[in-house]
Image (tube, rainbow, N blue to C red; front, side):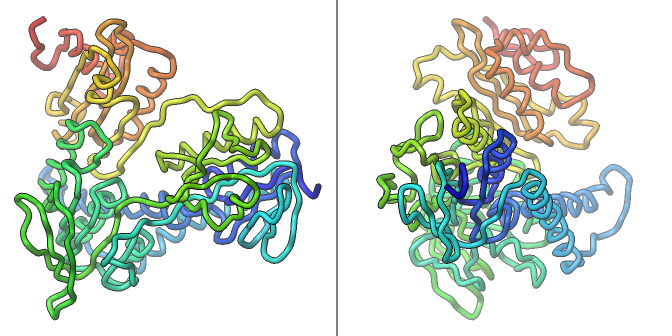
Length: 463
């Protein structure tokens, strides 16, 4: 065998797997057909967050006058914005390349395909290994009739290219994380933004209370949102792209200069030769069977990240990559953890565990606590009153089942709740834990206190 392990894909899941396996003494190679770091580092998580930071700074500059600081209207240098974003990407991707070198992971450039049970072809060369980890990620999903052309119709990759121009009017199809984050970016940069979501709420997988709170904040900033609405067709006119809508309360048409198709992502499970070696892939591109060790039906082939199963999140892929690598190295590793999720708008929406509806459907008698940021001293000192914390517990055992936060830095705050669920903490544990004052983290404590009718800064329900 040329290698003990070959990892296919160098995105977050792939590079975590390759490095951990090398740390454990395996001879490892990582095949990558594109840029090192995959979608997340090059055209996903990282550059998007860089643009969201730019958007937040623009908003802060505009809104500072409310607190007695006058900068004037922010001036955008789009070339410099592009340079900042590119610099962030280069720093992260070059870091992964250096980590490969430091851990003696051999990088194989080219598209990988299985040509035998223990052999892949990469860039015309064949390599053998005892084990394989498939970490090929995903690509943007499409909408029939709204095919991406890079000009009028763009996907998330195209939306990252802000260097040429900011469209006067942007229509976003899809109210999930990707669509909402770009809506936030372009609204701050000066676009008139309309978001269309087919389901009843934006952020459809989030707790409805959190979703409604985020929607309120986005609409307050001028982003037009239509839920329960689908796109029915489009035509290009002299005025722009005229898109027909179907939905209660939605206009019959919306005219936009650009249309962002952000209806999710599709896993890259096909075209790898997996079926030929006995690994089934479904019609969507997911590997059909993946166990708790991340093994497929062929025990020497593992699948992680987007290609393995939802949710399609980078940190889930990272954790799965570590599990697969450790198991491939003979360690007793299994995937068993809650998965937090974050939408990095302003304010952020972060969730972990069950929603209230999911907990009820699972048979729990739920105990719910809420704390609005209107009652938070730290939020007031930050000049905001947008947001809430909602905790869901089991009324019988008091165990924390879920937590949902809409707030500045909600993505950082949610880690406390994730750890609490992992450690089997109760609402009482959260309520009794001293939190520093004044902080946004206090809202988690107060929500837990509210669940027991003992909140200090808001009215409590009678029990």
